[in-house]
Image (cartoon, rainbow, N blue to C red; front, side, top):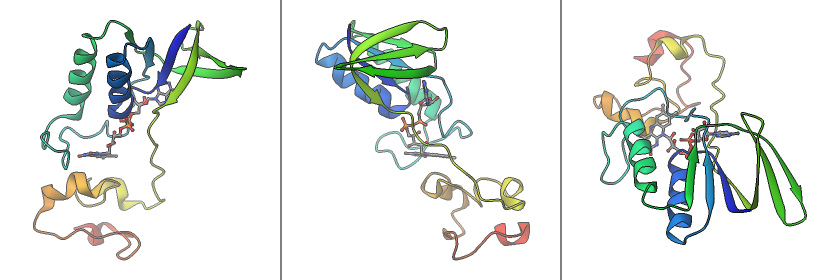
Amino acid sequence: MLDAVIVGGGPAGLNAALLLGRARRTVLLCDSGQPRNAGVHAMHGFLSRDGMDPAALRQAGRDQLRAYPTVQVRATQVRAVTRDADQFTVTLGDGTTEQARRLLLATGVVDELPPIPAWRSCGDAACSTAPTATAGRSATSPWRCWPATPATSSSRCS
Ligand SMILES: Cc1cc2nc3c(=O)[nH]c(=O)nc-3n(C[C@H](O)[C@H](O)[C@H](O)COP(=O)(O)OP(=O)(O)OC[C@H]3O[C@@H](n4cnc5c(N)ncnc54)[C@H](O)[C@@H]3O)c2cc1C
């Protein structure tokens, strides 16, 4: 039985795997490969990595985990979890199961965008769910936060 299964291989899950690997825990990290920031190619506001492609950050995390032989990384979804007394059973994308004493959820969040027609067309530098990440690209405009200046038309997004 594994010490832990980590569900999600974004920065949170990778960091957890790194710490558990350093503690020589047996860990399976499962990642379905749909990070919240999949649509951007430069991250900001993260000390020492400003401007880095977030995919490169995740790859660096996976590369560094190779130094820890008790950590396995699999590109698979966790489809189901059951708990029986002091063990968890996870069902993976291929239908196989794994048992672990601990389950660590690092699944991130999914944005539910407001029903504003202009949202998509005005571009992420103007309308963003992550202003700290994208505002630097429109440095001539201050940040505006919903709902103070609702972006109800494309003209409001400039
Ligand atoms: C447009 C945009 C730009 C952003 N820019 C920045 C930035 O510049 N700087 C910054 O610090 N932050 C930025 N963020 C926020 C960024 O997304 C988070 O900081 C970071 O991704 C959070 O990492 P996480 O590991 O919690 O989640 P995520 O990166 O979302 O990773 C979660 C992972 O879990 C996986 N997963 C979910 N469910 C399952 C399952 N059942 N089985 C297996 N795997 C599963 C997903 O596929 C995903 O790979 C941005 C967000 C957006 C939307």
